[in-house]
Length: 143
Image (cartoon, rainbow, N blue to C red; front, side, top):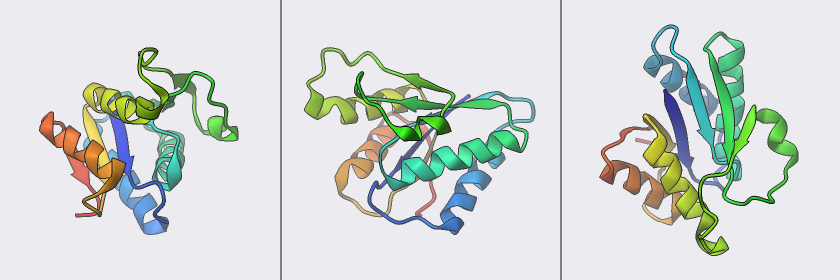
């Protein structure tokens, strides 16, 4: 199973959202099922989700936390949260569109999308709308 996350980058998220992410994952993963968590690595929600996934794995769910990067040369100290880095086929995408195309790639490859989108503007909203248009299984924790 592949789970990906969508949320506003600049919103401050607290322990309550952290616990909601953990609960949403645990309620949707079957016993013994292996999970690949696709994380974007940008913004507060991405960071919260990567930490939540790391905690979920230490508590016994089999899986891996993967950073899906829109740029080949991106380097971050936050890589320690991830088991590996994936670069989707974006070589022909202009850099200014790389993040939105990466987000679409993550949605297309996901079995479940866990979101925290409370505003109807911005990149997170557009990505969530794309997921719904593609009829993906979506849980928006902000609703």
